[in-house]
Amino acid sequence: MMPDAGRDLEAKIERAAELLRQARRVVALTGAGISTPSGIPDFRSPKSGLWEQVDPMEVATIYAFRRHPERFFRWVQPLVRLILEARPNPAHRALAWLEEVGLLKAVITQNIDGLHQRAGSQTVYEIHGHIREATCLQCYVPTPTDSLLEQVLLEGKVPRCPICGGVLKPNVILFGEQLPVREMIAAQQAVRASDLMLVAGSSLEVAPAGDLPLLALEHGARLILINLGTTYLDQIAHVVIHADVAYVLPRLVALLGLERQQESR
Image 1 (cartoon, rainbow, N blue to C red):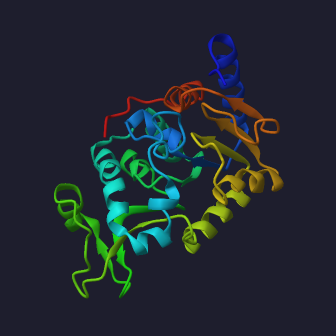
Image 2 (cartoon, rainbow, N blue to C red):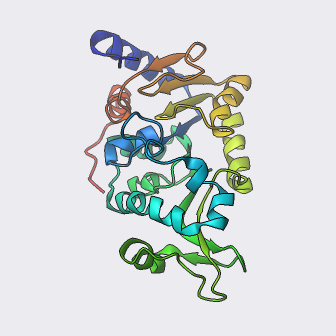
């Protein structure tokens, strides 16, 4: 799939801006594609995706983690380093600004990098978890990850619970785990109350996150898809834009007359 370009791209962005002008309750669903401009790789892109060099079933399931946590931490070490070094890009800041002016009611994200919050977004539902805390698999006590970074990044050690010595698992959702119930319920409520869903940088291949746009459509919302690749909803979305979200989202803000001199955060 070749990215949209030229007049065709601008026409689609203008159509999306018109739908946003008509909307009152917008929700955004974001995936890995919104953070790739910040230097964080996605999972499925050829050559650069995180699953290109490793079988996710060997390192990123809860069952594999319980048997061989050292394999998970060896795999995730470079990703955590990239996340810590990354900064919000114009796409993150555009969504934060849409929320600040009252148009965007919530960001639902599949990402664990926290870049939406760092960009200024306030209502963020992290349905795949985050790396700010880790939980002991033995006594279930959570621990802030600030104190664990040296062990994981510099020493390559499996972090241990300071209370019981059990293995600490970052609060990210691995394959085979249930999504955080409160976050998912809140996300679904936001989707049902919306009149427009904006999908940015998600292939919509992972359920149940990928089903949320269908929920929006079922409740009468319009759907805008912005993603470099195709999705299973391209044929029924109201606007489909195959382009870089870091270009498209700021352009939408500008066309809405909502742009400002945004500070780097």
